[in-house]
Amino acid sequence: MHQPRILNIVCCAIASIALAACGGASTIGGTLSGLGSGLTVVLQNNGADNLTLTGNGPFTFSRSVVESGAYNVAVVTHPVGQTCTVSNGSGSLNIWGDPAHDITVNCTSTSSIGGTVSGLPAGTSVSLGNGSVTLSISANGAYAFAGLLAAGTAYGVTVVTQPAGHTCTLSHASGTVVSGVMSVVDVSCV
Image (cartoon, rainbow, N blue to C red; front, top):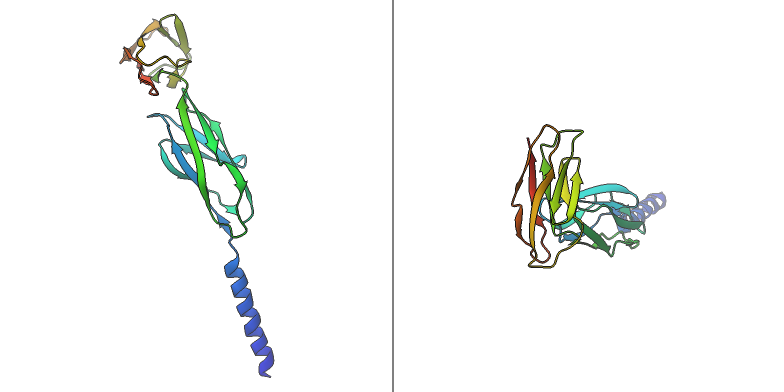
């Protein structure tokens, strides 16, 4: 009579050990570096689970990946004036479902001059100039002139065309380019 009960206890113990050995699901993450101040980058894992990052340092996606499951991290939206690359961004979790936190995202500047536009009324635009280069902006938010300038190059941003019925002013409109750092020229419209 005790044999079925012992067999039941043994089966439950084996099942508990087997369940404890299962890894379940784990997190995917890593480290972001090089993101410029005030900028954002949007990452995505497996074509979903968007993650917006606003600062350098560690990151973790909100959705877990099951043991032996694949992950594929990509940049969906680059920061204005920067390009970000992903290293170790794809693979599969091991059979125990250990987390993968060795993904690195590194952002580098693609522009030497940029900033933020605020107060620009909807349906209007402002044109900025730096030397012979003109940039038309039709929305509030971050902007950047295309291209990198050599360190030590002087710049002087001006308002070429004001928005109809409004005036935009610049802060820190002139200076000297520093290597690897975007010179910030903010635009305030009223």
